[in-house]
Image (tube, rainbow, N blue to C red):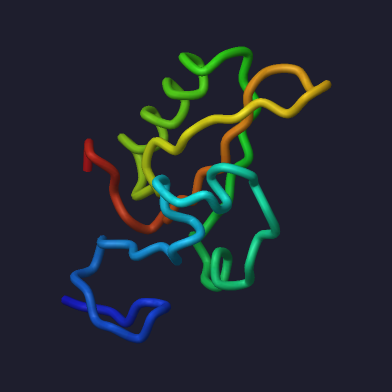
Length: 102
């Protein structure tokens, strides 16, 4: 089974092609948590989660747990905002697709 991606190409179901700005290696949403685009929540089951944790280890534990349950954008780099407590990270998930335990 296949489906169209946001770039108009076909990919196997369960493979999520994120826009370049949202890829963990890009300096985009994962790094600076910018505006949530309509495409990120364009269908039922798509969610954007902003996580604030005490430290990087806790944030990575949360991201890994979510990744085991659902298809996610993976473990993204965390960042600190001056004057704000803890570390922050944004995760994209598709609740319709199983994660690594599925």
